[in-house]
Amino acid sequence: MIVRIFTASVLAKPLNNAQIVRGVFVYTHLNMANLIPFTKRFESSENLVNLLESRGLQICDRNKAIQYLDNIGYYRLSAYMYPLLKMPKTAHLYKESSTFKKMMMLYRLSSCCCMKQWHNSNFKPSYTHLSIHQMS
Image (cartoon, rainbow, N blue to C red; front, side):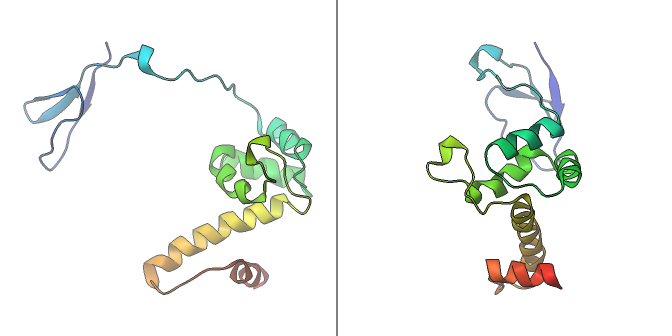
C-alpha cells in the first residue's frame, strides 16, 4: 500500500478512493495491476540522435542536437517533430526537407506564441512569422 498526503488551501471533493482525514486528502490505494505496463527503455541522447537520423531527419550539428535533447527532452520535443513526419505518421519517417533546425524553430515559435498570448490576444502566428523572428 502506498500512502500519499495532499493538502489544499480550498475545500475540494476527494477523487476516486481518497479519504478526507482532518482536512487532508489521503490517497491509500494504487493498484499496479490496472496500470499499462511501460515497455520502452531509456535511450541516451546520442542514441536518440542516431534514431532520428535513421528515420530521415537531417541533423547538421550533432552536438547541439544532443544538448537540446539533454536539456529539453526527447518526448517534449517529439510534439514538434510530428508535423515533419511523412504519411502515415505511424511509420515514423520524416519528409525529405525535415531538419532538426526546423523542429527547433517550431519549438521556439510555440514558446514565442505562449509569451505573446499573455500580452496580445490578437496575435496570430504563422511559419512566416517564425522565419522572420529567427532572422532578427
